[in-house]
Amino acid sequence: MRLAGRVALVTGAGRGIGRGIALGYAREGADVVLVSRTASELEHAAADVRATGVRALTLTADVRDEAAVEAAVAAALDHFGQIDVLVNSAGIPMVAATTELSLERWHDAIGINLTGTFLCCRAVGRAMLARGRGSIINIGSLHSFQGIPQRAAYAASKGGVLQFTRALAVEWAPHGVRVNMIAPGWIRTPLQDALVAAGKLDRAPIIARTPARRVGEIADLVGPAVFLASDESAFIVGEMMVVDGGWGIYGYI
Image (tube, rainbow, N blue to C red):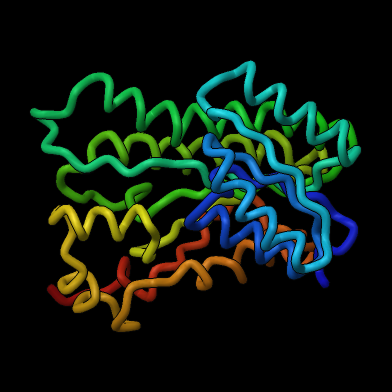
């Protein structure tokens, strides 16, 4: 119960990585604020969170919407009185040849993946700074630091998340708020399954390049997320934790 007595706000909590981390926090004793655009998904996730014996609050918000983010954070603070942990997991993939990438889709990727992270950090950060404590965990990607074709918008957004994390970490660490990033590798999520089903992603070469010889599961990210939220990581600031089964360091073609 490493997070007992704490409150965690998780965006993108209705499914995928966000939902997995929210449940992981609940199992460690944290009350959880679940934020997403889709109310029905949130309610299913909240039911699983409450089944662990902790409290859950669901809030619908588009992280690109400044007013919606501010309102959601205010509601969470009004309900629980504090936010100890923020996980920015809301995100969308973007696969397209750059010459065919529309400006609208570019703005979608930057808006949700990067601007949404900024807006949530700013809103929650005010409360954390006032208390002099808190842990923020941004969800980046291998695309934050690797070049992969047809991912220009996604890579730009996730690369931005990495540098935003570093800048924010050194700004807020003197005031007791730690900011770090988890960079998941190829993780089996509903979004990834959709890319595979659409023929836009082939897992076979990914698995062949991964020393662990599999793609990751959402459960592989829960432990790192709990660690970064807990006091066990109290001296870790501005770091990128890569969780990819060795994909990024593999030397063979």
